[in-house]
Image (cartoon, rainbow, N blue to C red; front, side, top):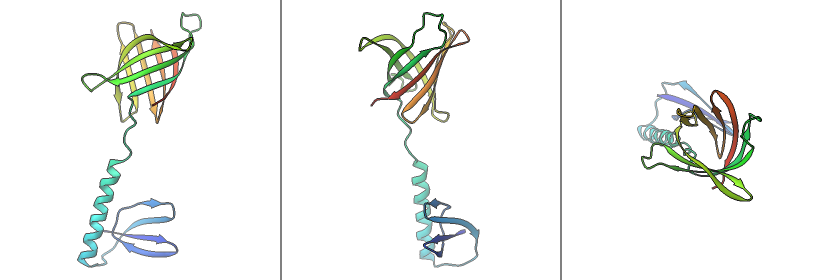
Length: 168
């Protein structure tokens, strides 16, 4: 078992616990053969197990589902592409394994439908991707909190840069 020495308010306390760091507490592990009462050790083990279980839960993953609004900037000025204010309505599809994105643009203050795309999401990398092989197009978005930044690659060229934020 590991013994932890806790420096708190200038006093060193010996505890059986898990490595942690809080604002005013510095803790480090060191080996110890110091015997403590069975009751104390059991309570410390329980606290350690509870701490591990709570830490394992972490912060819930950011939900992609919802309304996202922002800009879509054209990168090939000689194309029919134009800079737009976009609104994406994102929901899980019927399988629950991928997402449906209803992509709209704002025209005279109203949403105008542009199309619907299917995306997959990699929670570990926080990447949201849609590939359209028939059109040689790929959408890639990186999720950071309530913001997504992305690109549209079309026929091997960077066609659009997209920057959206979650509204709800």
